[in-house]
Image (cartoon, helix red, strand yellow):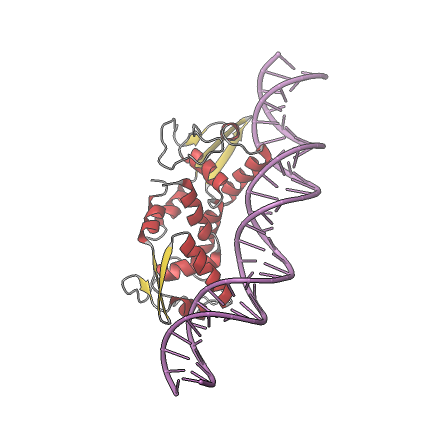
Length: 111
Length: 111
DNA sequence: TTAATTGTTCGATAGTATCAAAACAATAGA
DNA sequence: TCTATTGTTTTGATACTATCGAACAATTAA
């Protein structure tokens, strides 16, 4: 694994808002009690992953974060460019899931 | 584990030079064939960890990177502030090692 | 004491990141 | 077709980061 790939991955996860988005997709869920507070915890579980895919990801993320949609769109792009998530559109339906290969790289870091 | 701690850790690792320094300390080694090229690979092994501590860390890192020492000093500070490494001085001797707790956080991410 | 080594701090500069507002494009429903 | 929904792109403001050189401080060796 090239160093520069790790740099991309860590850079994508180095912004708090983007990390939240990534974790929402990872959990297949955005029921976070967030909306601006810092109460979002990694251990927070408690919803609805359906085969790891988050349906209507963009709309759901917009619904639970205090960021403009242009900013959220930008963050989705960054996560995709880093290879951390993949997204597909089907009409208005926007589905995202974590790229398991990238997740594997993170798990293998330091091993 | 608070989200903000992960942000700090990932931010510290999101710069290529800083990531190299961190990995040198992690491997207890800076025999990297680097010096500017992008040939540094994560799998690269092949030297001398002594109980996980890198002796004369600052000097050794300066010796194998093309950055000014002020910049390298800054990067060491960032890695310490993120809790990723601990450093101690004993006269002119500067010893660094990876903070195993932080390394554990990284390993536990996504689990 | 003087000189060399080791690392820190300060100030400047160039580049990058974050974010919002507004205009836009594509789709779906009435 | 008209309208609402969904997301993208562009533009621009502001803040943050990476980097260097120079001056500095602390330690060790001569």
